[in-house]
Length: 314
Length: 303
Image 1 (cartoon, each protein chain N blue to C red):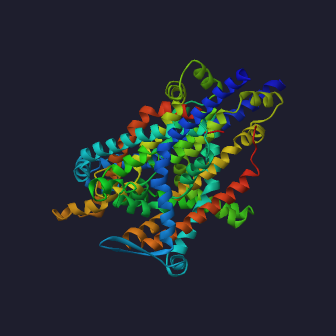
Image 2 (cartoon, rainbow over the protein chains, first blue to last red; image 1 turned 180 degrees about the vertical axis):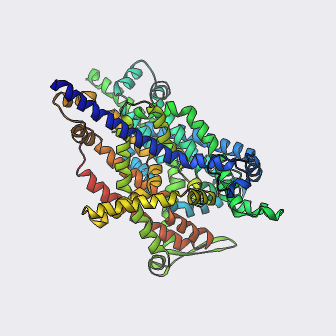
Image 3 (tube, rainbow over the protein chains, first blue to last red; image 1 turned 90 degrees about the vertical axis):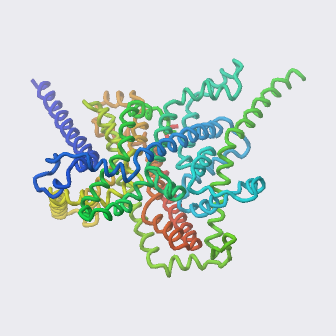
């Protein structure tokens, strides 16, 4: 008798907690999804529906016009291709060089390697805006320590090209690369030393051990770094708008969208409605993040499970 | 003699080889570090003590001492205000983000139906909340209309208001009440900034060995006790990691970096801009050192 009452209190507690948890998670999920849902709803609305008090979520006059406008203004397909090319190339280069550096710092200790690792930490800590101006000036007259003027006679202007991104990711110094090196180092430190020693005894050199034994074991770290690097490069406005101000990539086009939009009002005066422009702008944002969302839902399984073994702990 | 020496020598060879390869592996990073980080850092420091004028041959740099710093701190109209605002913002948000993400990580670690969907949704902000999208979102007119017409704003402020009254009457100090209601109003900002922190905590929670929980359960510990006696101490090193990540994440783009960029690239005052950047870096370092010191005194290390 007493036992069953206790049981019922226990089960009541469990039920109440489940309910509270459900409310919390559903509520917060809604909060996160709300802006996206709202953008979707806005983007398929006709201009008429914008002022209609009875339209909140589902439009009466369904239309693709906003998409057509936004695609035309942003030069969407070209921009998409450029952004993909840029993000993928920097992501792959960054992942390779950061994995190498991470392994070097974790296992192949040499004189002064701790001092250099302090340098990695410094790159994480210094706000990017602190060094932006010298880097900008440097890229404007890029000499590579006097090598380029020696060969061609004058310094190269790397602004508005993809070179700044390729060079920084080739040298593991791209956007947030310090963090990736740190993730890789922590992960490699978590793999037992015996594995490496066994490989050495079996005759594997350091390069083989790294590429055949350590790297496959570091797959979760790899996935994390690949995803973060891709997404952050895609969304980055800080470096992209500075180095590539006139390039056709997503974040530059998005940043310029309000300005470009005001251009379309010149032809037809009836379109100069700020709310309509804002509607097209929302559609533009949706178009920019759509590939990311699609990609995320494809890889999130690996990502969510992978992160649990990424070994940031430690 | 020889036989003793030989294995030692070969071992040293292996170590030497490893050291050499280590240097080679780190080399790409080192080159980039020097070209794209260290030299610019030094020249940024030099610029901050100089006046810079652009002419046909490029730029000329003239040493003028602390003048730029004086100008940033005393003459420039917006620097002080924006700097304090940004720093207060960071300091206020850190505890909220860390506590919130720890709570959510514990929640998402529990077993319930639709857990993987919930996780997928909660990590979505990692992807969406950065850069231009955030900036444009805050200026969206359509969103403003929608909010106004559906009465969302009114309801939200009303809720906070009622909560505030309730807590004030309950005798909670006004400062705490303002802090809490303020954080309720900024909930979207907090949720969208805590994606990576949730990931880090979740990874940490999953490395805690289940035996600890089993043992505590046998000794009749409640879930509440298990959290404070096991989960919390075990993830406490990660609190430090997360605090540092949160600081670093929030310093990369905010009003102060906008001001620094504007001063540099719109007003073409590179010297002043560098001085601002240096002051900002020192402020950020100070916050980092203080929070690291405070937290690492309390952190529990397992080994």
